Length: 130
Image 1 (cartoon, one colour):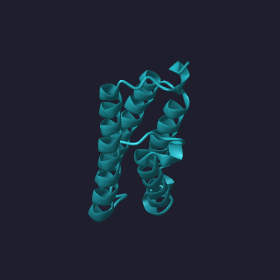
Image 2 (cartoon, one colour):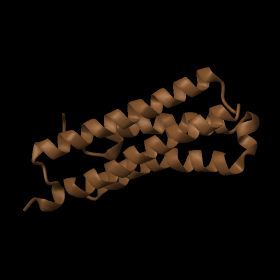
Image 3 (cartoon, helix red, strand yellow):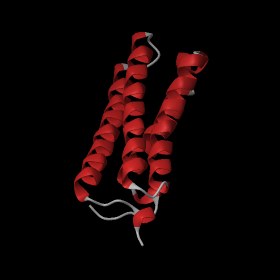
Image 4 (cartoon, rainbow, N blue to C red):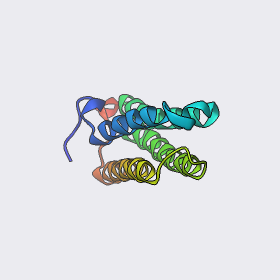
């Protein structure tokens, strides 16, 4: 796995960005758009994934980065759970649910892979360079 110069170079962040955009689009129309609490929570959770990947990267230490990645992975689970709520309420079609849930699951797997890589790599981060 290569080193990253910017958080925008991280595939998991790019995937999270796509997921966030899809969540915003899906929650901006139909009956889900009128369930303000669920809509807003889904949007916050999806934005949290990409935000925590970016913030953890900018901390410049792999230990902190892993902590933020864990939060991002948790937010991915939150999105998937909220998608079930939206499905059960009839706010999403089965097709949209499967697509968005798949994106969220793929994002979580990418984040987990990055966490595993960082744990095994021995890289401590730029703040530890002398």
